[in-house]
Amino acid sequence: MKGDTLIKELDCEILYRRKEGGTKDLRSFIASDLMSDVLLVDNEIDILITSLSTAQAIRTADIVSAIGVVIVNGKPVSADMKAAAKEFDITLLRTKLSTFQTCGIIHRLKEHAA
Amino acid sequence: MIDKNIPIKAEDSASLILDLIYQLKIKDVMSRDLVVACAQDTLHHIKTLMKQRNVTGIPIVKKDRLLGILSIDDIFKALDNGYMDELAEKYMSKKLVILEEDMPLAFAISYFDKFKYGRFPVVDKDNLLVGMITSRDINVGLLMAINKEVSRMEEMLAQNAPVDAKNFRKVFRIRKYDFEHAGIASNRIKKLLTERKHDPRDIRRVAVAMYEMEINITVHSEGGTLTVAIDQDRAEIVAKDAAPGIENPELALQEGYSTANEWIKSLGFGAGMGLANIRRVSDEFEFQSSLGKGTTVRAVIYFKNKKGEEHDH
Image (cartoon, each protein chain N blue to C red):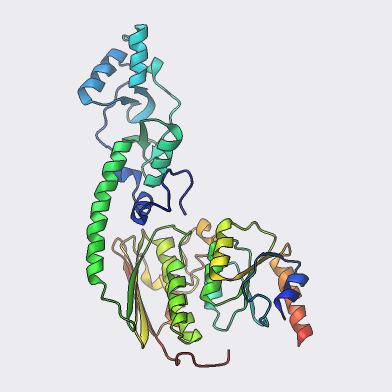
């Protein structure tokens, strides 16, 4: 699925969009609030879904070469986090949906695409 | 970025000073040689004490418990109004701004800016008076710490081999609880490896190992260093901290074992996966720790995949 589909379906607010935003086909997602769990995953990660709204989530996303972070539960995002998103050129989105709802929608979209 | 309450500009101050004001605790710089008086002493007696000991403020105590402070301004008022024979307890300030000895020095600096007092009493965990801190104590303490740091950095510089195009070596200093910067060193190394067109799988392994080490130093130690050495065949990362060390190293290696507090967990860390994760991605892994002596973790990752090689994920 493309980034625009994700943004539309999750009703996301775009806090930062990476320079090549919207081009990549998004295939792999991970949802976790524990950054160590994110680092534990071996395969490619496109999007990190988390309620951790600090610069640390962006830095973790950079380590695993994710291209986007979705903040759930409409949590407030610090200026630091936005600055980090810009620095590492990682798309930063925010949805009012919960992790559960977000994952449910993404799962449905993936099923649909397949 | 630095706390906006501290009157030091992060952008034009040496990062060493910024490091130090967070590393040093108030107890490291405060004066312990206290001049104190009792609530039943007369203002006259306190004036004499101030003159003899050359201080401008005296804590009034009862068995190490702080009751108030009498400043030279209180003495001036008493002289003007002629009540020098009265007791300290009547005129001392009881609305006290107090610092705790375990707070970082940055805290004291922000207090001097915020409250405009010349000195602050310092208490210990049991709320007993253990020292006084003035801006002079801070200056002296910082200068001494800078001296020490500079000699240490010179030593470190000597250890750093010259960098050529193929070999890279760098020492990163990591501060305790500095979540603002935790991870940045790893992001930089990842960028470097990406620029050198290493295989993404190898980059990922190096970045994950280093990131976990960086977070570990930030969360669990009193601060330390990360030494990264990269040549054509491999990356070696050594994390070293001086304290406090790990009581049970065997246990620490187990997945899920964590000593992190709730506050650290709320920041997304402390799931007990750090060391296990480092070991998982590394080709060589060494871990040494003993209580009071600090911890050293060494990880080596071989670049197994050819640079810039196309591959499936």
